Length: 166
Length: 318
Image (cartoon, rainbow over all chains, first blue to last red; front, side, top):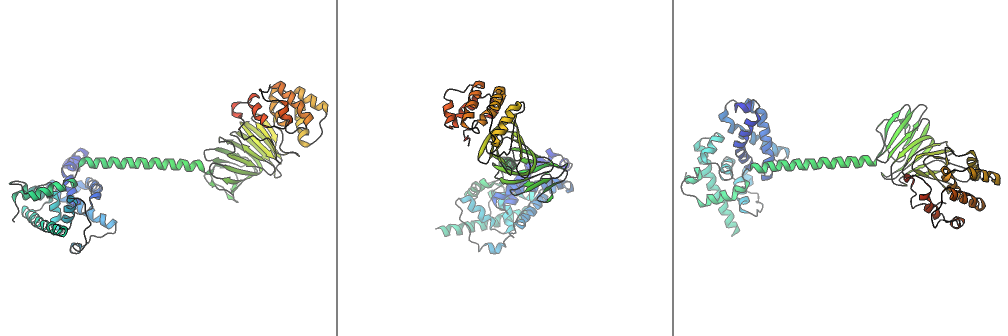
């Protein structure tokens, strides 16, 4: 990281290679799928410019996550489409999705914000609980709680959907 | 915490439902290659857009007429002109003493406007343009299909046939056309002259445009042409002298006189032209006697003119 902070492009590429899936997960929990790749590039450009300000290399995950969350918020601000409060999202009729993966992702995005990120990182990006804890800077306990409650809520929501279908 | 070890760190027995989620959601996973592809896609899109902008700009440039250079006191529609200004139909350009301007005609060519001149852009569709020179002098250099560029004066119309020429005129349309390259179809009072490179014709005579005269034409040829176009009777002596002195370089003058001369003189002119440049099979005096002017087009390629002076099929004589 010290090399990346000095502007070493190869060192930064290595950071990108290691952490891009993590940042992608953060973004995917907030943004439309089609926007993630572009915003991901923006996040790493911002990170490359600001990496010299990062003091602890161990904090790079949470630091990148912070930039990703900030860019997600900017994305909605730019489009003058403020994030709809989560409580009211439950009343929004979900658009029909023709494949199951899209439906599951859609339901994850309707989970409370605290669980959303963890669920995407675990089930989309494929990180384990300990890896998520390490990258986000959360405690193992917090990640466990987020996962456990997120899985429970998701099972519930998908069950409701299944019943609606039937 | 009732979740299985599989949910936490993928150990222990596989939770079938969670595994199903993982499989279904895998398509949304970060894929480095896809990022690169997208970047390349954007680069291709950007390149295509740049190309499109370049083409559009060139097409636009090909269509517009604009002032490319000015020197001295030049005005456009009464206001001081500036280099780069676009010209639209109806715009009038005036140059004062010791001034000049160059008009770029898209990709067709350019017009050099001399001092003390005034001209108006009458029509400009990008492909076809007409200018009217009110007075003064212009030097035209055009590379365009026949009839794509036309210059009007108070007394005549010059259709460009892909060439270079100079026109000098006064406000009454009295002046001259001198062709330096290719040829020009000059019309006045319903009569036509075919003016080729190396020759010069008056814009206006009592009976239409002047007949083209080459630089080295004998004086007798000049007098003959002047009299015939002015409606003055020609003596046999003058006619005989002029035809005797005519050289192959005067073929264009004799050819133009064929449709300006009375029948008797026309037969003598035909005979002399046929001596200088033998007509091809099928071209005979009989066709000229009957005023079958398509015979001109048949003879034209055999008169020794350069390839750049190719007569188009739209030749109608009078």
